[in-house]
Length: 266
Length: 264
Image (cartoon, rainbow over all chains, first blue to last red; front, side):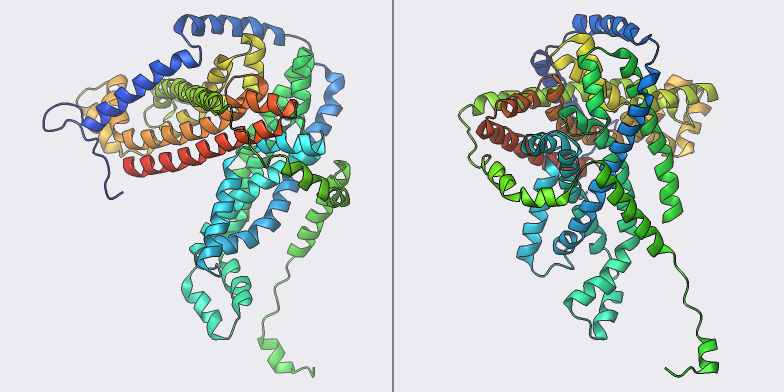
């Protein structure tokens, strides 16, 4: 923020600011160069819209209502996977966050190792982990829960560490004065202060994980995504329309429920 | 302890909390979920040596095809770039209508908000599956899916930024006789330019991460190669691919964070 790029327009010369022009030019060059890489041109793009409309015609079928009980079971499985993974990650990430918070870590070396570990674990998308775990333990919800837990540890650990870093130092010193040891200081002075933040973060993560769990099934890791990819391969549009609609409803519900719940709890 | 009558009455009663009950109920629920999902942790613990042996197969990444992997990563980034570009264009058009203080009518505002909500609510992988079925394998369905899904995000971000602009700026322009288009072009966009650049970078960052897994459902990029190598049990190639993805994502994270700090 010290050396912010100037974007003010008009400039003294009356021309658009240089960073702006350079940025736009670089962007256009990158776009035109990469258009060939992604096999994109206007004719193809326009044609694809026609194809999409033709494809959408497939969805005008009577939904397969007999499939509804299975669908509900799958949706419950999806939410269950997310809850389980979030809770596992919660237990793993609180100790890690203490090690990765600058004011709570035992020493700078542990701090760096914990930080780097969290960012490496966080960097890969859930689906890559899911792919690895599916080929390790086989199909089913277990690899999904494992993949979600791993990525969630990375995110929660980082967010928790940041909440611990901003706790009030005076309260910590107050507890120290009465003779609290290293461990007691962290349990009784730092974590209670960070608690509202921790709860807020956890709720945000649960929301995120339910969305992620809905697609993990694509690689065979349980949840509704598994049924979706299967119905797609078998061209069962009567089921597909129900699955797509239920994912849409689930995500829209989360959009409305989670802000409400956050306000209620915190 | 001997009860001290007058002392005890001065101490307020400890507030009763049902928190423990809720925690217990929650863990009961989790236990039930684990049973229903057939997740047994004894199983996981006994298979722990197998898991270690399995993970050790990733220990020796095979970088002999590195130029191919880098090419695929380049395609992945190009996919994300075009997806972000399409989303940006769509958001550029929709955002002014979805900003409460700019939208020409209440009806316009509600409709464009609902369109953005719908786009956001369809996960991009779900869209990719549908688009791959409609358009065939290749990067194009991935580009379109990313475009549609993130247009919902960008439209929401842009319109919220435009709602935060001081009303005086719009009123000043309107008082000179500017119409809707002119207020948007000369008041709205210039005021939110910095925020818009930051938000678009953030979405680009997210799209690269997403594009690297879109290949799993046949939408090009490095994810497809990863999927194939795991299906063929080529763990050394898979680990090289994972390392390429990891390095790119971490580098991009730093680069976009730096650029966003510069712009903001």
